[in-house]
Image 1 (cartoon, helix red, strand yellow):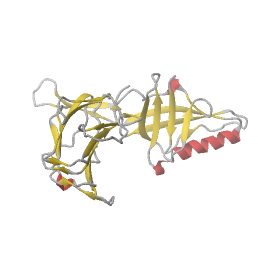
Image 2 (cartoon, one colour; image 1 turned 30 degrees about the vertical axis):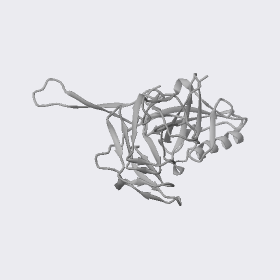
Image 3 (cartoon, one colour; image 1 turned 180 degrees about the vertical axis):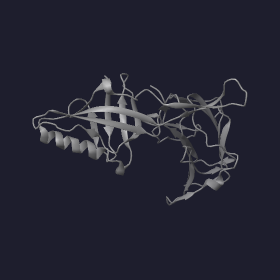
Image 4 (tube, helix red, strand yellow; image 1 turned 90 degrees about the vertical axis):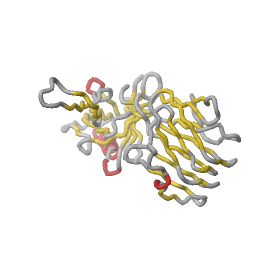
Length: 289
């Protein structure tokens, strides 16, 4: 059964299961549709235009919400709860779409007009209070509920990470194959723990690589994040102090993302110690469902 949930910007978890809140599905829109604009170029006298790229716009999810209760007082309390959950001052909320196959799609969003628009004139003995709500997802992608964590190579010794599969090692110890079940490239975070001398992570599927010109000592962690608008490189020392390490990455490096399907990654280093560990984490995402 398809159901919906909302984790408010204040952390409150609301369920649209027709117990306290419901959604009129025939007035639900924007879940699967996606606004896009084609970018084209043309020259004087040219017949037609030349397609260059697609620009994906923010997603708008429009909801007709029913607040349910026994009498005006209970409806008012649940109305206030919904308003508090969506308060934009606290940041973004998370809308959750539970599919028939058991998967859960999460999308970060904010109310378009600040708060739901409730109908006026509810009677004292009413059992339902209608509201209309537009949720804006500036990032229009749906995200999986859990991230995938995969080692970058077959390190010896015991693993203590919450590894998830499917993944498989390549023919040599420094190449791994990982799977991205999404339909859109996913940003990733790479973590390298020393000792490692000048490590390089190469995405063999896209040809892009991230090279570090520094030795990561025992007890240090180098963390590389490739998300748009949040690209960063951080060095964490043995005391847990974080410092900007962007200057250790070569200018030819590319902060690659993980494309859909099977992706092959290669790890190399000039030298590594017995405690060296490296892994990559990413959350699959979808533009359509």
